[in-house]
Length: 108
Image 1: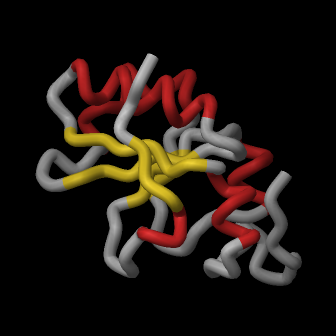
Image 2: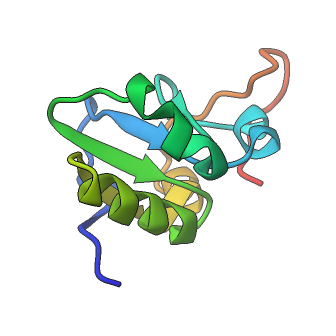
């Protein structure tokens, strides 16, 4: 299955980012300003997604987000997979925040 993909280093500062990881992964560390909808809840929460412009989708490594992108594109969104997921995000030095403000953010 081929889905549109972008390298994390090619993302601008103002991208719309959807994180489809599980709650514990999100809590440990996520991109500031990202929208969190776990992959298993995506079909029932489509109304929460922005309807205009590109939507970049991320998970830990890129597999779940690729499935989400395929589903979203089949349902009218302009979705793009973030290659390498949050592991690449962290490796590129992009900002991370944890759900617990006192915790050191990490990608799990």
